[in-house]
Image (cartoon, rainbow, N blue to C red; front, side, top):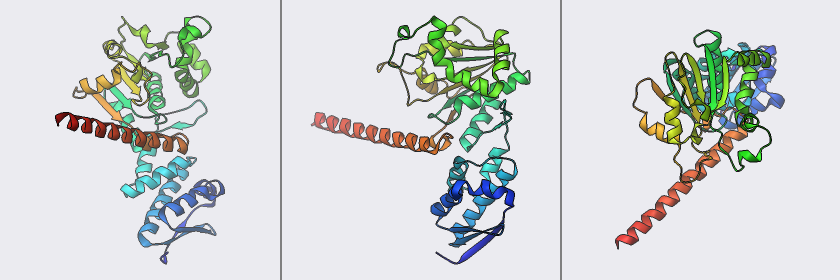
Length: 336
């Protein structure tokens, strides 16, 4: 390890937040950049190769600024800072952190946490219809809900409509107890959970009783025209092309639409095309419709989720490659 050293002043009140539990954040930076980081009387000393030390110094300054803005640092912040640090010297985290959508009922700010999420939120602001496509844990639905509730509170729309297809994943709806609403409620539970967290149970219930917030299966949208509404279609990979067309043609004046889905988690029959896949091909060149593709690097759940998503992506890529090779072999034998 080279002898280049940089010293940073870190206020005592931010030291614990910056270092993490059992110094886990600092150890991650040390291991990733191959530097040595020590705390000496309120000063953080970084030693090692000059280029790596300067990169570590930039990341620590960025994380310290996040802490000074009142953020509780998480492992995801550190991982993303390291990833962005390898690609850019700009303060990407600070730029993202400046975009606060709203606050939860407990006062926690809701902000995009990755560049992909920031681009997704900006697209929602700038376009009438936005498709958010990406793996689990990338915040597609949660950020869309936050944007919808903010627009509703600011009187930009008069109601919020949340819908998703009630696809039977392995069990039949008739197997479940209760009436129709009881049967479909489990499919809509993630939408309820997000509403409770951002809006509060009482406020949500009051607005739902007034008909200002509606949570319903996609089938209930047929035959309606949805004016001056914020409409979110969740789990869109489980729609058929006909259902997707039906949904998109419900949109009226003054409305905004966000469609979210994960193309890798379809519950449709094997021979059924996904409405999300077809929409991406048919609508990609239409003005005022944006497609935002999030990836494993935008996962903001537990870091293990990001690794799981990445592992599945790599596995599926290998499978497609092997299938392609087998088809080419068969075709070449057939020509002989």
